[in-house]
Amino acid sequence: MTERGGPIARWFGRWRDGGAGQGGTGTGAPAGAHEFWVDLATGAVEQGRQSPGAQRMGPYPTREAAQRAFDTAAARNEAWDEDDRRWNDDEWPKDAGPAAP
Image (cartoon, rainbow, N blue to C red; front, side, top):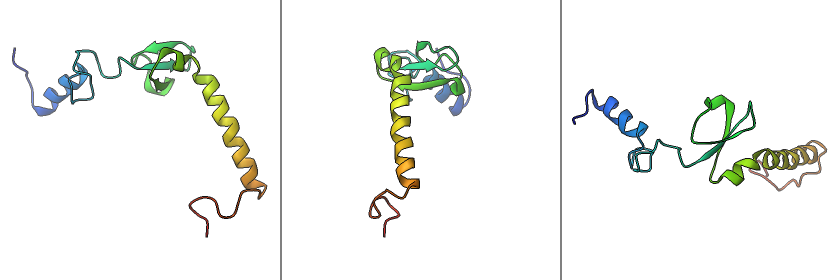
């Protein structure tokens, strides 16, 4: 069977079908099918890109990592909040960071 359309249409067809070198695995599975995502509206873990992009968090390499996504995000937010507090309270070392003299 021959592919129809111009080069962009042919590229998109290969990408959509997971062709190797086109963002896929070469297994025929769609790109991202072996990754896990969290649907932010429901909290459900999904394999592959099922929910709209603005509604999902990920990708994660395993289902277990995706199940811990909210705990991971909460821990990172706490660390960043503490960094912000230290920065705003002028406790941050003056020689730290890219803007250091």
